[in-house]
Amino acid sequence: MTAVTKTGDWRRARALLAAGPLRLKAAIGLALRQEAEALRREIVQGLTRQAPGGSPLAPPKETTLAARRLKGFGGSKSLIVRADLRNGVATIVRGDEAFVGVPRTARGKDGQSLANVAEIQEFGSAPIVIPMTDAMRRFVFAVLREAGEPIGAGGGGGGGAGVVVVQVPARPFLRPAFERFKPGAQRRFLARVAAHSGMGGV
Image (cartoon, rainbow, N blue to C red; front, side, top):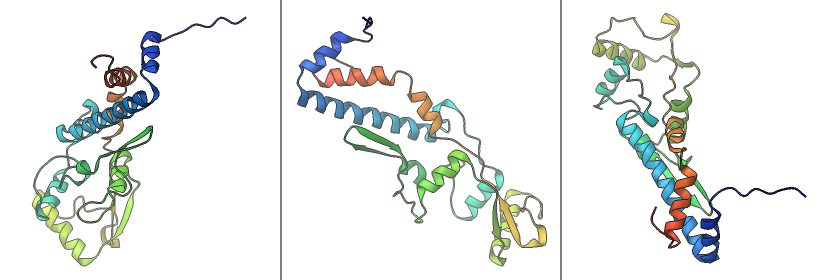
């Protein structure tokens, strides 16, 4: 006969089951939502503090800041121009599952998909070749002047080929927050369930 070893807090588990299925289900649902909202706060605060999960974000380049100023935006934080991306982080709880992140349906004030923006910022992009129009060329020159760089420097690949090549570096803001949040998640969740089942504080 194979020996069975019990692990974990079986006293608490028995008490939770004794609370009744409906009460237990409600407690689990509330605990799940609270944990999801706590993770969302971790992500949002990480962006606000410019250190998701405690890992500092690389500051924007001077040309990026110059482009912001020319477009009428201030601020010098990474990933925060109009705060669309930060405000797009959401919590969606359905049944016994919770989603925390940027939903596919989220859109910025300009109509751009915030999920696509989040993916590019999280993992970086491959080189993107953009055909240069006269208006774009004038804007690039204006950005270089605003940034105090000599015309012709940093204008993108191609020179007179009529294209500019850009590549977005990775600036993870979701994964570091997830990693920071994971330790102790099971203990916190069970404590919340116990509290909402009337078995004591968190």
